[in-house]
Image (cartoon, rainbow, N blue to C red):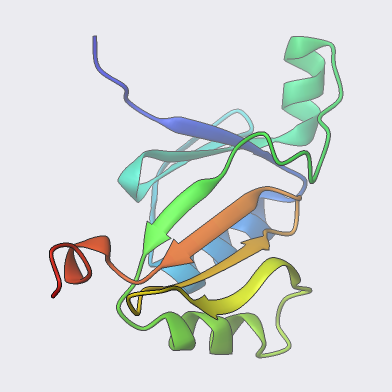
Length: 127
């Protein structure tokens, strides 16, 4: 068995495509009936399609899942978030951990939790 994709529910597909493209460089691979497959295996599904197929409403900001990214320029990510193009709700402000690794946690426009850290391998086995 092989995990192929991670699907998140979004309120506005076009807004979400722009967000994930601009912040993380993900590109649209295909579109199909309220679903957009982006590079790196992220699938965006329209909240209306989700509700229709599942017969349940999604719960934004539920903190049950988290998308995890690594970026060498975490300050650049925060600068993009604070550019005024996005309404940003932080779960954890930019923080430096013991050992020097940095992280920030925030929500996308639909309430999906995202964490960005500086690459872990830079901090493993440091002495």
